[in-house]
Length: 90
Image (cartoon, rainbow, N blue to C red):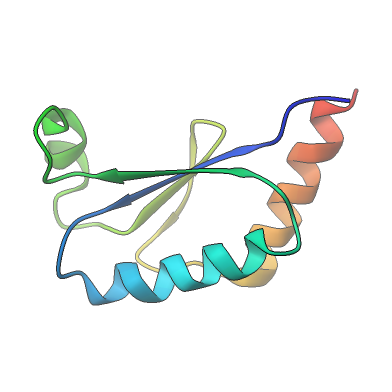
């Protein structure tokens, strides 16, 4: 069996869209296992992400590939995670 997919969630403090999107991500995580990494783009050492995503957060990556900006579609996230799990098992 392969490893769990990795979801990286790019955020920053005081981001209302981020809170809503993270709620969806965490809801999905209750039924589909994956590793969740949260990156605060305002933190020291995150300058490259801050430059890239400054006005576009939240941004969500799945296994290093961008899959969402601004909002997270729960149904699409579930489908992408299932695909990633199937791919990791082959």
